[in-house]
Image (cartoon, rainbow, N blue to C red; front, side, top):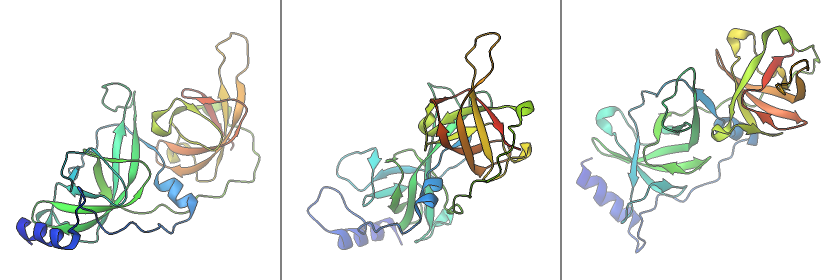
Length: 252
């Protein structure tokens, strides 16, 4: 379909006096809450992702940068890039402190804004509808193939001693926050390469920076997602806030 044909089709289907053309009315996403939680969960990035597919705008009479379910957003690729109607994509962006680029020393937080479904296409552009929003969808966000995570793993019932000979560290919480509380997700620098498995349990310790004192046990967490060198944990017990840089020890 040519760009003229695409525009004409949309104008015919969406003709309305409103300032913005709207896509199909958003429908309820019938997924378990734990699956939605994991689909929206943060994870680290150690470099800028090489993802050319980007959100470039929307179907509005004025320029906007932020979009929500029900809005039509434009994508910078079409049929010549293999885009097809009905395809779904995660929408993501990297969050960093200041103007740094993500690295091993300063990992970025990958924020999943939600996911979209391709609604209409031409040769080099597409329109998509926002199927689900974990956060606002913004101009410049990048797209990755959509695949729902498995249900959240069941926490191990074994109360094993924490592996204090192999401490890890908390990197950050959701939205690159440095403070985490009970019921929140956060990232640690231990993964499957370190023997971590889904459902495993960690103890969290705070170093008071006072010579001659033990580490203070501030709570516990369970592993909900594992990558080779990092994992996403859910805080299940908190005597005080977990802070980026706090120690974690795997119960193993």
